[in-house]
Amino acid sequence: MAHTVDLAAQKNPASRGTTVLLVDDQPIIGEAVRRMLVGEEGIAFHFCRDASTALEVAAQIEPTVILQDLVMPSIDGLELVRQFRATERFRDVPIIVLSAKEEAAVKAEAFALGANDYVVKLPDRLELLARLRYHSRGYIALIERNEAFAALQASRQVLANDLETAAHYVRSLLPPPQRIGPIETDWRFVPSAELGGDAFGYHSLDDDHIAVYLLDVCGHGVGAALLSVSALNSIRSEALPQTNFHDPSAVLAALNKAFPMERQNDMFFTIWYGVYQISSRTIRWAGGGHPAALLLAPGAGQKPAMLESDGPLIGAVEGLEFNSGEVGVPVGSRLFVYSDGAFEVSRPDGSMWAFDDFVATLSEAPPESGVRLDRLLARIREISAKDDFNDDFSMLELAFS
Image (cartoon, rainbow, N blue to C red; front, side, top):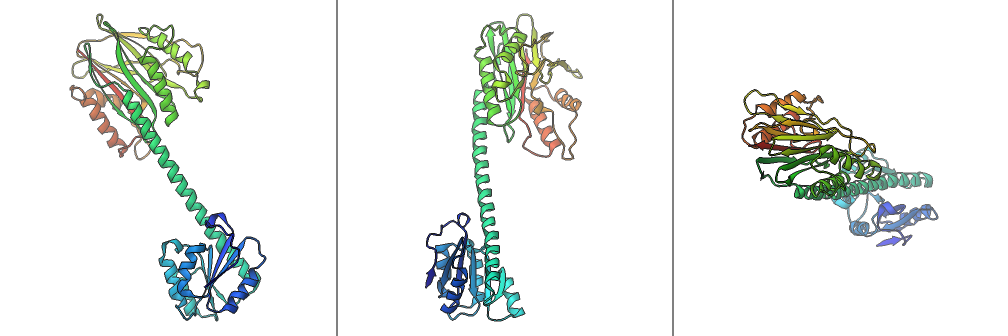
């Protein structure tokens, strides 16, 4: 039978004060302990006289500390300690053993079975209160840490699900590898675990011009992905007002005006934007803070031309101008446009992969479409010694026939 004091105690140990369960076959002990605790703020007292029902009573009241006798007629006290510790929900609840006398061997066995404290009954009232509160506080702190960890894990899972959904959405907006006029396109997109802000595309402006572009928003997460999608849609749908999309510098100036960082949660982005003219076999490009595109001419041993992208960042400062460049594209050339996640690779020792090695990996690969991209990905995983990336990996390959 259990004698209960403070029936208003809450079920969740972390949301209430000290909840004491005394297991002892002697009613006089139960009354003595009750009197020691009566009037103490934040302490609820429960008495279980029949040790064989102790686990059932504990399941009902969820104690934050258990006081239990060692000598009881229905069950041995040490066996009861063993049963509490063998039950998952009571594995960490502190147990204070009450004994009629100080016995080193019994005390050692009690601690070995999982008891937290050993008291010769009956102790002084202040001492008992101090021990009960001390052990209860430790258990409640453990419960709160476990709850906080579980909440954090749940929050991380929600975030991971959101990032995965955002990554699928970004991927759904990317154009399929395809042939556009004389250009064969291919790409690889591997989002990082935290999802960066990469997005890219290509489309015909008219019968003689093809646009290609890749942008990278600063930071990671859903916010960066949303900004990249907004900018991508503005370019893909040619929705920037009064903008000549045949003029790369005009496109970047319009993007800089449309996406000021103070209206984008202090986020900015880099971009490489080019327009290939089929009739003249030239590509005109402009860039804002983005890695240079690489134009690889046909033939063994050719060094790629660096189509620099040293203009200002998009959204950082209003009213800036952007310069453009132009270059001829020989038959059989390949253009590589990429984000910094393609070459900013850390080795396990913390050193960075050299950019020259990145260029060499692209240049020396077999000419078949896609082979260079796959070889580069394999090389990055080899260098970093891991399959996941710290930043989005995005790369376009355009083969000109």
